[in-house]
Length: 128
Ligand SMILES: [Zn+2]
Image (tube, rainbow, N blue to C red; front, side):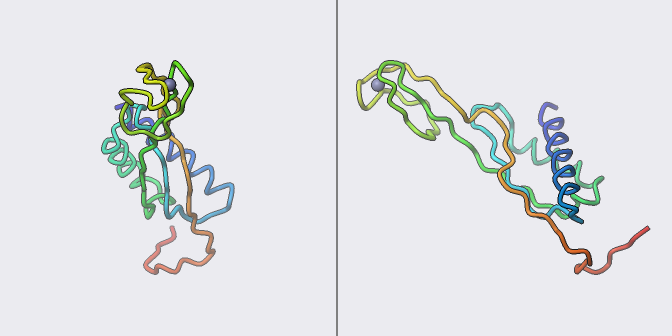
């Protein structure tokens, strides 16, 4: 249930951003999940789906997930192989076989689209 608590963390952060901008709702959420983070995307988005049902501000939000691949640095010559989905087998510069990954191991919020309208345009909104 690691993903669920991460989804909770995302929800908290989104609510904070929404409040900061005095938004009425969160529309689109773009996150990147590192390929090496060990986060299961399906579990993460499933967790978020559950959480948003309980948050009026998040109810209409759409979660978009992209995978962030790490950059590998050759341990021998320092050559960088950017955003590789696989661990490189051999360095094209020096034929070294030792690589050190950097990045691609965390969860980042890339972009958030907020609903800033005072009036609700969707209709059917109920205010208690
Ligand atoms: Zn190299």
